[in-house]
Length: 89
View 1 (cartoon, rainbow, N blue to C red):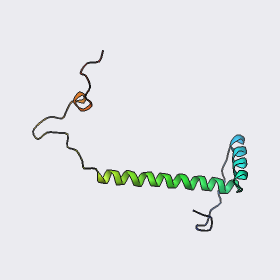
View 2: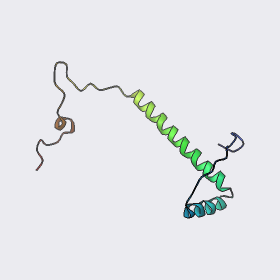
View 3: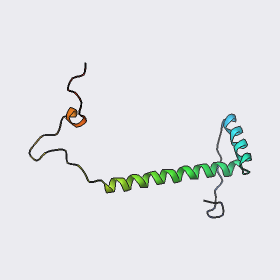
View 4: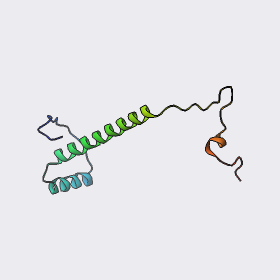
């Protein structure tokens, strides 16, 4: 989102010298401030996380639960579920 769409709030962060130097160089290359660069990076991360969570909710809502137990039967053994040989040598 652009700066004009939503108001921004000032925050103070602490960075190592190497990270601060990298951020200044990156911001200068993008013709922006370090504050704007960090704000944009955090906003993009927030949007990616929200998109991932929405996709997971959608996926789980569309999947029909699987009943593992046969009526009157037992739960399958691990080897049966994963099609593994019964002994490992």
